[in-house]
Image (cartoon, rainbow, N blue to C red; front, side, top):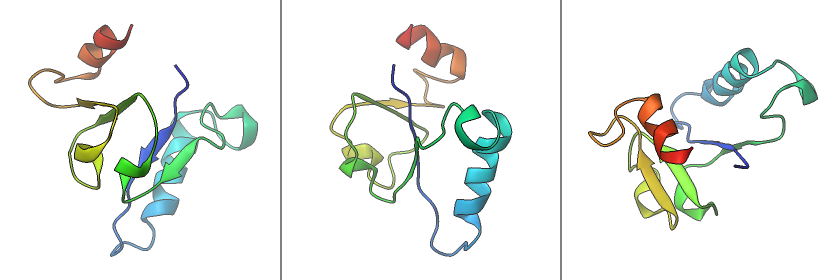
Length: 90
């Protein structure tokens, strides 16, 4: 899989984008090219405009429900946790 992080950000929270990027840096390898998601983070409030085969999201808002590929609803009865998502994908 060629993974990207696709996240929306509320307009009302001016620090949300920076906060989310700081989270990615903290949990996925720090600054620069050492990070597995270096240059692979996309912020969009229209997730349906992104191309891909699979979107893992906990909601259908912000275009996730109209995504043209397969939507895996994290937290749903079918995919209640990360292990169930991994079992589906691997």
